[in-house]
Image 1: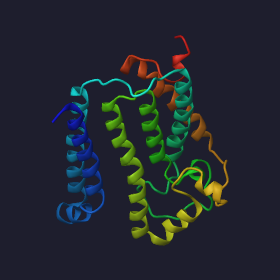
Image 2: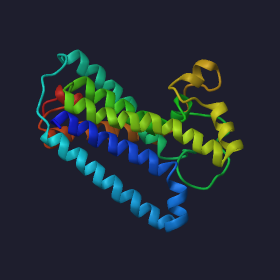
Image 3: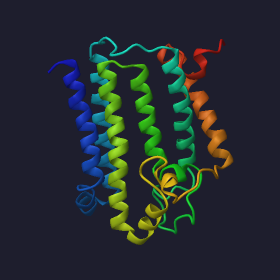
Length: 230
C-alpha cells in the first residue's frame, strides 16, 4: 500500500471507529463494561487510529499542489477562519448539543445558534476547508477531509441520536434552528444577531492565537500574520 493509500486506510479507520463506537456499539459496550469501561475503549481506539493517521501523514510523499495559492485566497481563508473561530467560541457555552442535563432548549436561537445548531461541528468543517484551500496536496486533503466528514456526518448522527433520546426537546430545538448555516435565518425561523461578548472577543483571540501558532509550529505565517511583520 502506497503512502496515500495508508492515509486513506488510517483516516477511514479513525472516522469509522468513531461513528461505530459513538452510535451502534456504544449501548452494548456500556452494558458490558459500564460507562467508564466504554470511555476507556473509546479513548484507546481513538488514540491508536489517530496515531496511525499521524504516522501515515508524516510518511506520505509530498505531492504537487493541485492549484496555486495567492494572497487573494489567503485573504478569503483568513476571514473564513475568523467566522470559524467565533462559531467555536460561541458553541462552548449554552449549547444544547453538548453532554449535560436534558433541560429546556433556549426560547429563541441567537448568536451562533441562529446560524446553525451545530456551530462547533461547522467550525471544524470550515477549518478543514480552509486548510485544504491553502495547502492543496494529496496527503493534507485526505487527512483534513476525514475531519470534515467526521464533523458534518457526526452532526447529522447527533441529531438522530438526540431525537431518539430527547424527542420533544430536540425537535423543539430543530424547529428553531438549522443544520445548514443560515438555513433557519433564510427560512425566517431565526434572526441574525444576539452574539454574546465572549462569542466575538473570544473568537478573535482564538483566531489570532491559532494563526500565529503556525509560525513556530509549522514554520509559516498564516492569517493576518502573513501581512504583519513581528
